[in-house]
Amino acid sequence: MAMELYERGLLKKKQVDGQELVFGNGEALLYFIEKIAYREGFGDLLAEGTRIMGERLNADYYALHVKGLEVDAADPRPLVTRALTYAVATRGACHLRGFPYIDEFIKPEEAKAHFGTAAVSDVEALEGKGKMVAWSENWVTIGDIMGICKFAWYRSRNFPMLIQRGLELVKEIFTASTGLSMTAEELYTCGERVYNVEKLFNLREGLGREADYPPARFFEEEMPDGPAKGARLNREEYDRLLDDYYGARGWDKTTGEPTPEKLRSLDLD
Image (tube, rainbow, N blue to C red; front, side):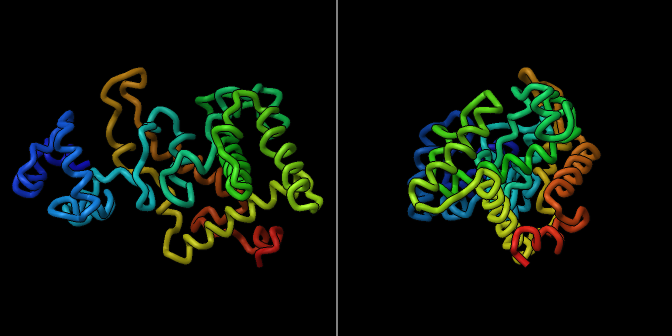
């Protein structure tokens, strides 16, 4: 972000310790890594992250984050389902809080059986994707609960294998480790319960529906090059997908709050 602001003239050389802070300047990058660690000079502001930097420099538009966590290298503009996953993640724009890639490999008959519509197997379709993302978040949370490496656990291009690894096998590990009986359905509910508690925490801190959106820049600017050249998010489509996601979760579509009925079903009332 700082390099872009410098190249656009929004940051001046005197503000960045006299460094030529342009893309490709590895020496400047190494210089500021140390300055960030010691919070010296411009490194003191860099250490705050892009959200705070955007606020202090009046450059919010260029601060690509969700809930204060920066967006990673995977630009979600070509695929709105990915954008939803990054935006609704409870800790911000994180690629490890959901698994939005299911629609790339799930078979139509599997999608129909598990998510209620074969459209989930269509990468470009919106139907059923809110339910798919919600399911993947609960499923991924099980790995966090159990302390399992996600690369070893959920990297599969086969949907039945996701179920076998993420629920059946983990259920056996839990029972073997604790001596307590646990079904796959009960384990999944544990993941859903945790995710709802995280949502309640965010709501207490003032993060409502407005916090579940990708950066505005992704709606306004097209991708300049590459295979997805010209792609950008459509706000109407995103709103529809977010409504679908909230509905699948049992959350109020206006506020994003878990409904009393949902909390009771999870013994969280």
